[in-house]
Image (cartoon, rainbow over all chains, first blue to last red; front, side, top):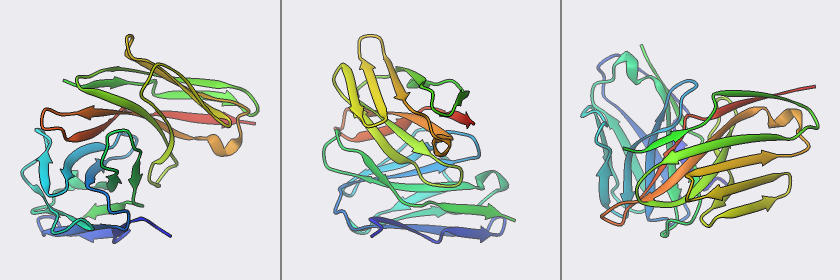
Amino acid sequence: DAMVIQNPRYQVTQFGKPVTLSCSQTLNHNVMYWYQQKSSQAPKLLFHYYDKDFNNEADTPDNFQSRRPNTSFCFLDIRSPGLGDAAMYLCATRGNLGDTEAFFGQGTRLTVV
Amino acid sequence: GQNIDQPTEMTATEGAIVQINCTYQTSGFNGLFWYQQHAGEAPTFLSYNVLDGLEEKGRFSSFLSRSKGYSYLLLKELQMKDSASYLCAVSLIGEDSSYKLIFGSGTRLLVRP
């Protein structure tokens, strides 16, 4: 059974139209991450949470925001998507200690038209 | 800043052994992970090192030298299905005790018959 679920798998949005990607987990992990991955590049960390404590990377654009209403769910909001935001968005969770692996969802591939 | 380097591409022959290197310069080092990623899919966990030395797991082994900021992933008895990207990821502990997971750019491995 999938432990980290991302919806939808594929999302097409219009240039400038707000879009929300979702992630849910059944692992009860306190740590959650959002990554952006463009073709042939490494996953780039956008945000990470420890429980509800939120951290964004210094170079995460203001256009990106995140919400975590409870342990199980996390959302990535893109306020005004541009063509450069087309990418795979990966959600991952991790146990409470830093020595555990990260479990990834299947990703949401975002296309901006 | 944080820096993680891997070769961009490698080619090897089915049945052979290949070593993929990773060097890192980071602060707050808390462990190193290797992930495998097939095109269009999420990364999957392969191995974890926090102490110096070799960790063996079937056909895959990973080595870490913290003093040198160096790790490698060794793949033995290569199979065609091992053609994928291999991502080195460093776990970092921040001043606020949050755990970040930062990825290198990945090494694309092509296994030929």
